[in-house]
Image (tube, rainbow, N blue to C red):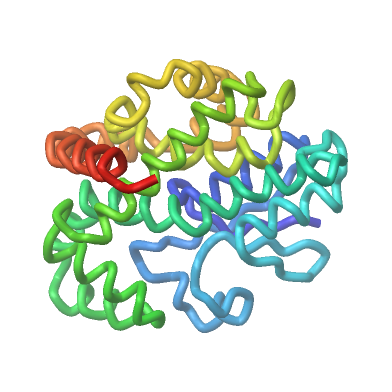
Length: 274
């Protein structure tokens, strides 16, 4: 019934897998290797014209966009509920989905690229590297990748991503002071699931503490998230030791520069008129 076109260390795929594990679902997995540009294969593009992962196929029908997939899963397999019944809480949940989609997704992409994928692309044969850049159909995405490839952490797009994370973790600390232990209260929801892969990526890169070391409620939330069985089976257990090793090796190399930019973002926030 369910087939997930998937790439193991994709944050968007991780979000969908956590949701499916929380629902107790089984599915067939089809790997789409992003580093071999399999997402641009004509057959795959028929399923997902954007050329991204994940894509869920349910009873022969394709659903794309990870946020929409997660909501589709909650509508189709309603137990346990991950979208609140209360309309106000539902809007609060979707604000977190919106924050992830509009800020953290590009942020984690640029931070990850500058930490480790940039080096991998530098070591590619020039022909393959140029094909990767040509295959990025969206001019905005191409500009981001080119900037981060050329400038690394000093790309303005990386700073934008660092600032997006700063806003998210500040809001999370404030939100948890009013609710907790999860974002919307006593139970995990799609708000928490949306954020988990993006916190996990920073954690595995050895960078998360740069944002949260002075935010005790976020630290407690992240400890709770890591212990949640659906997180373990939908994300942590599906990352290979080679991938973890790569992240742990490359992330600390950019930590000092990231810390400098976080400090700069915080100074700018204090200086900004309110």
